[in-house]
Length: 146
Image 1 (cartoon, rainbow, N blue to C red):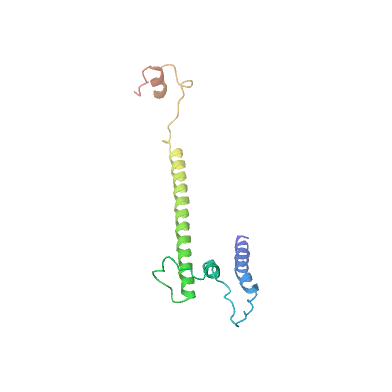
Image 2 (cartoon, rainbow, N blue to C red):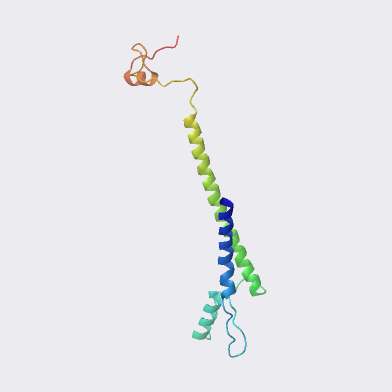
């Protein structure tokens, strides 16, 4: 049952990734015959809009390293996203593991009582024996183990 559920989830994820890319229509060619890039970023659109608003605009600075093509810049962006997701996943995994280890250690410490040791309350103790914890509170001497 679990294997089948995992398989169905995997198929659903693959369909959610592939179908939108397959169903997106290709953009029509413009007046010059060039087809527009399908997946351009907001940076290109902003640069084009600034150019139409103020044709004499000069950027304040230039990039230190200009990628050779759009594919390389997309690759660098995807690499940056993957590294960020990997770091966040690693941090969350370490946090969850630490929390589980702390809970396990607390449960083990709570469960580890000396075998055969009894907790004796003041009401259940004989009249001549007062448990050590109660002896400190009442000021009476604690019973000795002879």
